[in-house]
Image (cartoon, rainbow over all chains, first blue to last red; front, side, top):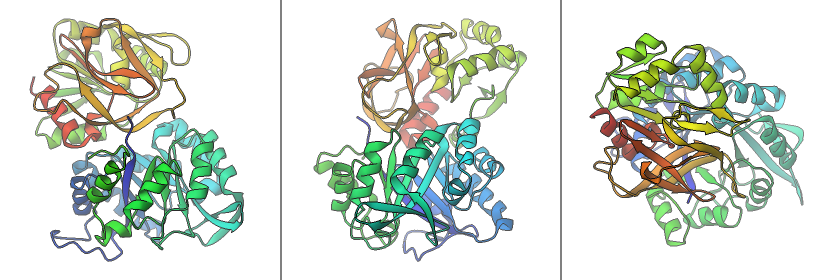
Length: 252
Length: 199
């Protein structure tokens, strides 16, 4: 049976992991490769690196990071953050990343999704969708790190990106993100049950039970989280053992 | 030296990295002479079956590969590479493969999400060179929409469940195939690559 995936997310700026990560055993807690190695040993199923470097001129730093990660990490990993062109996507995949994730650029230029899928295969195209609840049954899509509201409805946009050739959807609930009160089960469930591609739920995972809910109730295929792991509140292994005890299939 | 056949389908960086990490040497080859020189071959691949076979024909690799495999050189097909060993596939119309392993490549059916993407359990049903030093079952990383159905069940060394049970690893003399990606399946995947590299 296919396992539900647990995916730690790391923010990388100028080639360094940011957001106060506290690990005693690491020589250099800012080194993406060292942290990646740690999470691989913890049995993370995949890794997502979000490049939050502001300037495009510094893009080559990320290419170098991708190359170094690919030399030592033998689980799938995704690179996202500010990617706008097919050439940038090619640069990242050719250095050994398995997937790329696009967000704002996909909204501005939906054609990029199909072009990337045609060129490199749907399996490496993750479309990240940030949504915020605006009324009882409507979630609006936001771009540019949540700073810009679009006219798009979350569910409609998810269905559209799936038809355009996205291989996976990384769905972040802006209402839940950073709060550790649990994933947004409602919109996750709606999207996961209406698209034929896997949905990675993100935002709000703070307790093992939140992961159980997002898999059992919302039918997510994977769950992504950052602070719960970085601040060592729970280890990936602990969450997985909890899930296994509740009959959720995970890779231990 | 492990010769990885580069016929324009998919990214080979991870595979090269994994082989290097294990302490073996690899090279990318894309010509018949490259194939004929090889001591050990890996046929990787992602994408559509017909497109892959077309590229192999364009590069004149088919006869060289058949000759080399016929002479007993070990070959490992990964993902689409394994599927190409079979007689035919129904992906986007019916297409002929290498016919090294009698059988067909069929669409995953059922109500499950396709592609079958993620970690799934691999259960070995017999010992093989490939599963040396491995537990009887472990997880491997899969990304595929079609699966192999060999005519001779003796060629199957491992199976996986997804909308039914299918062969995820095969062995027929010097021909080996895995549907999952050993280069992305952490230490157990690397062990499979190591086992093949040490033949």
